[in-house]
Amino acid sequence: KIVVTGLGATTPLGGDVESTWKALLAGESGISTIEADWVSEYDLPVTFAGQAKVKALDVLTPQECKRLDQSSQFALIAAREAWKDAGTPEVAPERIAVEYATGIGGVWTLLNAYDDLKNRGPRRVMPMTIPMLMPNGPAAAIGMDIAARGGVRTAVSACASGTEAIANAIDRLRTGEVDIVVAGGCEAGIHPLPLAAFASMHALSKRNDNPAAASRPYDIDRDGFVMGEGGGAVVLELEEHALARGAKIYAELVSGAVTSDAYHITAPDPEGTGAARAVLRALEHGGLQVTDVDHINAHATSTPVGDIAEYTALRRVFGDHLDKIAISATKSSTGHLLGGAGAIEAIFTILALHTRTAPPTINVDNPDPAIPVDVVTSPRNLGDGELVAISNSFGFGGHNAVIVFKSYEK
Figure 1 (cartoon, rainbow, N blue to C red):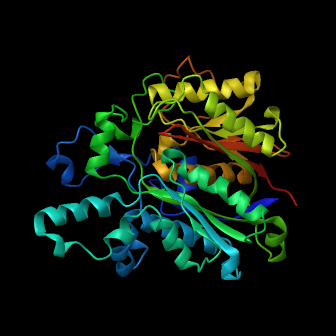
Figure 2 (cartoon, rainbow, N blue to C red; figure 1 turned 180 degrees about the vertical axis):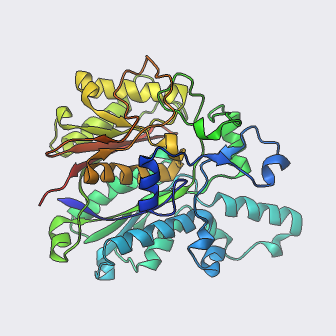
């Protein structure tokens, strides 16, 4: 068995796991108007996002913030919390690995450096620009911080990245290569260019007058996703290793699976075949039946097409049993953290099992009749006995990633 022994996060709802989970259960929204001057400077059509609740400079040192892109700052904050939560494991560096993802990487560093190059010349481009902008920068920062010498890898598969990174950790542990893995994902893409580009695609909600109500998965009036930022990290290890060192255990990571649509660079396959295969493979890898699943943290981005496609995939897999599954769509509260989404949603799934409480989906005022599922709209007790939950992530490029968790009993 692979178990979860540490959790860490910084999100639009809170600067750590405890505050984030408390706000999520309270039905709060982390979406707000962006107050930065560049919003009016560029006359952006979308002026709100899920901004990190706690600034990195309030957690990290000024030197760390200067040498790390915002994405790496979020990653380091989340990983340090997870590592401490796991009891700061004393493990040989060669037996520690990192599987940490991002969808875009250091976009702030890249675009600011280009502005410096154009406006001030090549000598004003910072020497640290390359290590700050590279997509593996967050994983590398974590690896150096915890002295991980068992391998540091980065999954980059758009919005499926964080979930794929956690799925990749399974093989690292089961092959016996390492004893412990820090896995997860981050994103810091609330920058004028990504916002303008996503808006140009008509992918973003335009509810500038009511940001807190903008992300509304499964609601008939949904009009696009909301950008979010932050990071999440989980500490994973084999059960025997965790028990030997007296670690607390949140849940079991049972299995994972990755598939691809080969359908369209941005649109999901409307038939949901690739996503359905990912769910089925993940369950099969874990020796589970579709009727074993009690809870789903859905990808549910609040886009008109995406929510329908995911529903189609889930109905294809679960049939009538889907009506018995409690579904949470937590992007309604956090926004969409892109490469970090799968990581924080994995944490929400783990805590749902650990506390036996499914978190609410907010802003579902008019449920879409084309998506007849059991959406959790207030915290719900998941009951007694063994519980099984899945977390879904789907990304541009046709990437599908699914991970399966189970409640833990010794």
